[in-house]
Image (cartoon, rainbow, N blue to C red):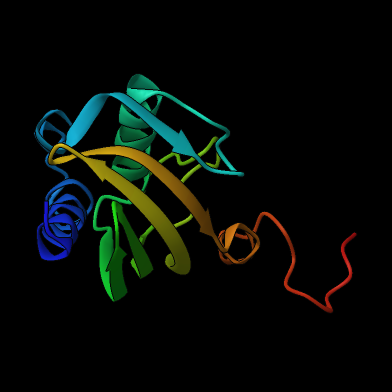
Length: 143
């Protein structure tokens, strides 16, 4: 597949799965032997990723991810992104806060035969936890 085709697959995943909450995109664009590598979630297979995506969309139902950069080389696509939304339901064990969040992250996708087979991802988990009130902002002493 061409670099542009690989970038289009990643863009379709962002728009369909994350921005519209269409879980069918996982079956359409992700390989059966898919693996997610994420320091905050641990490594996971396709079912783990499916559960993760459902949890994110349930906890932040108005989630919108903007693609800040999309770069392709070989079988990989790098996406730098910004996610925005409202924490309106349980998310990662944290009860709804009603807080608006803005989180940045970077993912590297590996594409094979028109499917996403691996993602390595990192995001500003500390910033997210601060926005949700789980961890005090830097410089503020707790307790």
